[in-house]
Image (cartoon, rainbow, N blue to C red):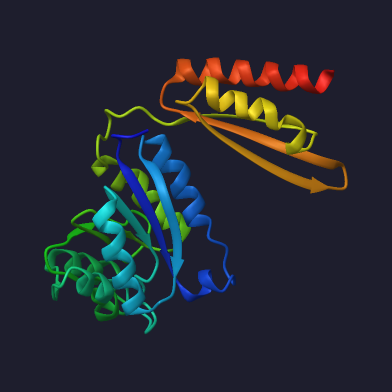
Length: 245
């Protein structure tokens, strides 16, 4: 997949890092980015800590085409993502007045609280939040989205997807998967042959064990649907033949 756009996904929040809340945003974004032809190279969850956010994002933005950040855009003291992104790019913050005006009009019960959401890093581009209050924003190659899954998903699909590298032009990363009741060790030779015969198709092997016995899920990925179909047919036949002996 060399030569195609790459992405890193960063989820910000103490609750994610300590395991109090499951990181469904990262899983959803990983799948969605591949559907848009962007290869995810790294996912990481980090604390609501400005220094950690700054160091992480500077490093990732330098080596990926796109960095997607979720979380920390609310109005409570631990929501420091706007401040941290300003520090990441060594800029100040400035209220984006058109966005602030929209927020004040929408949230009449506490308009100034809502207007804080528009205090964005200088030079950033606000991203409309179709379902919620806090807007996201883009600064250079970093997209910052809310942590609430419904808002994050709507914003990605309606706003961010249109701004990804090669939007509308790059082939999606297709996938194929199947499970077998077996051990990885029993099909290891087939997997090694697969990598030799189909080097352009990605292969993942995921074993599990439960009350019904061992199981292995094999997952293939490729931008080329014909290569994917051919590789899947070969792999399925090879594993079935081996296990039927």
